[in-house]
Image (tube, rainbow, N blue to C red):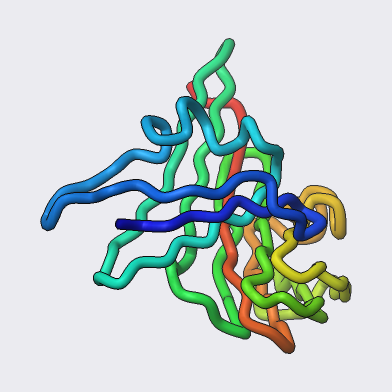
Length: 168
């Protein structure tokens, strides 16, 4: 059995439950939530617990009138330091989720292709809450394209990176 809790960006519990997953089997959140996790809000933090080892994968693709969105987690494990390139056609962002009950102090830095820091911002992420770099910095590509993003925190966080833009 895998238990899940969905937290809103302010850290409030929006939904929780559990799902039975057979050995070497899998479960789609779409099935046990009767739709997208984003029906509860966006962004959200989904906490999963299990007595057995589990593997988590997340991705989405939306194709509407020539526009697309992809998202992938940088790690299924929490940590205090993440570094990754900002990739994408038009826009890139990251969602920072706090896995701790206490507020987390985070710093987001953007570096250009030559490793020169272009901008930095600090933010507080509520316990079990989340924040998008979009709200903190706007479009990452307006600071550097391509860019390297460094996110540091005083608490364990998870980071999901995304992009959206026009495709051919």
